[in-house]
Image (cartoon, rainbow, N blue to C red; front, side, top):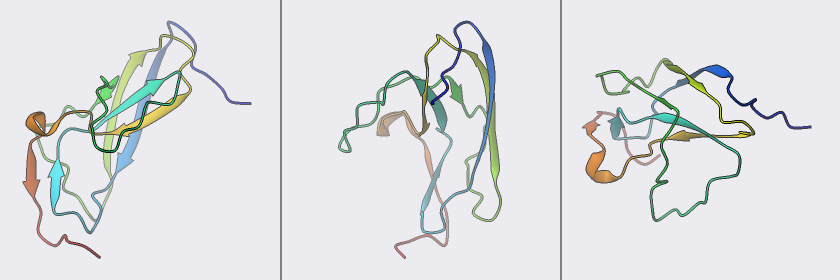
Length: 105
């Protein structure tokens, strides 16, 4: 049985990420989106969604050795059962920073 979020309940969300060793670029645009249905996937386009939780820091997420915490709170609509983590902004609204040591494995 799959649990769903309850309506009008505040949830605290916390997750950790680390920049993949093979990546050349880091971003600040990372968030978590909770939904009732699986988001429509189109690998040629970005997901035009507004995440309920977003990284609010000023620094780029560049750590390849450790884990960086992203956290926040939101009030559920109710029935959310899917979690999508990623960058929900298009290229024009995404700042990136070159990180040494990346490349194709």
